[in-house]
Length: 386
Image 1 (tube, rainbow, N blue to C red):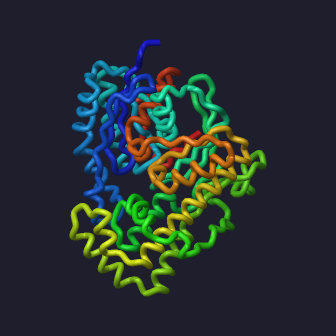
Image 2 (cartoon, rainbow, N blue to C red; image 1 turned 180 degrees about the horizontal axis):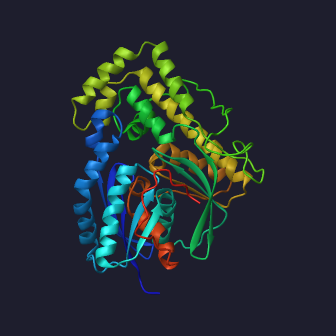
Image 3 (cartoon, rainbow, N blue to C red; image 1 turned 90 degrees about the vertical axis):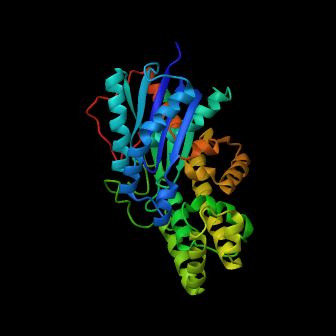
C-alpha cells in the first residue's frame, strides 16, 4: 500500500496543535502552540479564552506543520481532527477548520477520539523504533489533567476497540496536581512544578489515607455497575477529591496561609520561575507536603493499574497522557511492573501532553478502513471511547 500522509488538528483544551504523520508510524512534523501564559494568571484553563486563542493560532499552526513536513495542502491524503472529549468551544474551532479544509481540498475527513489519540502516541513511537510486535491483551492507563481511565485495548485487523475498566469518580489525577499546586501558591500548570520540587522533600513526612470509594458511580446506569463490569469482573476506579481536601486541612491545621500568599505574590512577579525561585520561596514543610502528595498519587495510580493488570492477565501496559511525563511515575512504574514481568511503554514527554501527532496516528487505522466522518458531525465534549 502506498504511503498515506495525514494532516491532523488537535484543539481539545488549551493547546492548538497540528501535525503530519506518514502511514501512522513516521512523525514528519509536529507543532504545538501553548496557551499557558494566557491562563496562568487564573490558575487554570478559562474556556472562553481558550477558544479565542485557538482562533488566533490555528491557521499559522497548520501552515507551520505543513511547511515543516515539506507538504502542501493538496499533497496530504486526509484531514484528521479531534472530535472529543474536551472543551466544546475549543473542539469546535478545530473541527470547523478541519471541515473547511476537507471540503475545499476534497479530502476525506477523519474524526478521532482524544483518548484514543493518547494511546496511539505510544504506538506511533514504538513503530518509529521498529517495534511492530505487540503482545495482547494491552492495558492502557490514560492519565492527564482531564482524564484518568483504564482501558483494555484490542486490535482486530486494522481497527482497535476499547473497554473501560476504570475511571476517576471525581478529579482527574492531573487536575489534582494542578489544584494542589494552586492551593500551595506554586502557580499553573502545577504538575511539572510539583514533579521538580518533590525531589527536595521527604515523601514519607505526611501520610494520606487511601481513597475510599463507597458511593455509587452516577455516570453508570443500572444497579451493581459501580463496582463491577457487566460480566461480573471488578472495576478499578479512582478518586482524588479526598487527597485534595486532606491537603487543604493540613494547610489550615499548620497555619500555612500567610506563607503561601507570600509565595504566590513573589512568584507572580517572575515571568518564568525556575526551580531555584520555587526553592527560594519555599520551606521545608511545603516541600515535604509536595513530596508526600506526589508519592500518594503515584502509589495509587500504580497500585490500581497493576491490580487491574493481574486481574485481566494483560501482557503489555501503556501509560500515557500528560501525567505520564511525571518522572517519579515513570520510574516507579518501570520498577514495579518489572517485578510482575510486565513490559510498560510510555510516550516521549513531547507526545505525553496534548499534540496532533497522536491524532494522526489514531486516524490511520480509520483511513485504512475508509471510516470517514460526515460533514454534519459536531464536537462531543463528553465523547466516550469504545
